[in-house]
Image (tube, rainbow, N blue to C red; front, side, top):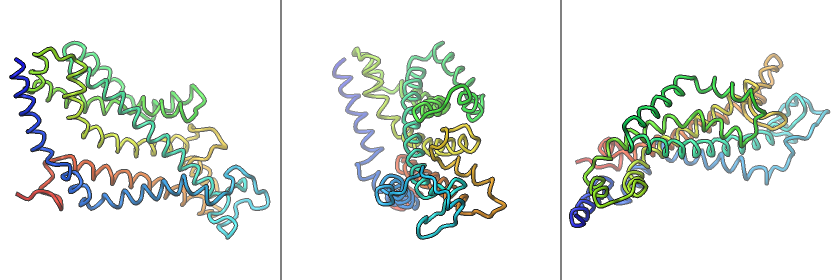
Length: 307
């Protein structure tokens, strides 16, 4: 039996090496993807702007300049001031920190929940799988933003709580992807051999199943970060996000709508472009990841196999 397990494990190792090729395959496809560099440069610039920017531009995002209310961009205030005389550039930087931190943390949390849930449902199967998937269908039937607004109205949101709320409404898609992948993998020969020689459920899940679904999960998580940034901005725009005076892009846009008749463009374009910039950069990286991890796209992309 150990000989069978050893042979099947060897066959699977060789199969994985042929499918994924050497590590250079990922680099070859990823770096030749037309959107990879655009997304990476955009994300790095955004991180530098949000986290390193306040170290250079040391203006307070909370200070009130009552003699400079709704002031247009100037040398003193590069992006102008809002209706309370607060520096828009300083608030834009701090809002970027919050959006990126909450977005990435929420996506990772949703990924972990979805992986565990999907692994259990797909591997155990039977009545447990049916019950777990019906629960997922029930949660997916409720619009995510509506559920977030309802939950947010029950408590005073904080960054940690916002992460949990977004993760709670985002893990369902990952769980379905993981379950589908597990269902296609759990009857492979190398999994059956591991089970036959007494491999535990945890060993099979961590050693044989999880490594083969990580590519799909990473791509899904990348897009979830972009979705989380949009959700944060949407909640704040509706007045349901972090309470003031904490700066965030959605709240800045909501405040700017009041001053459209005054043509205060410096209140609208910076946060709006920041949201667009973030979502596009992360989405571009997600597209590049998907192309690099999908062997079926090799022949359709520059740097991929042609024959």
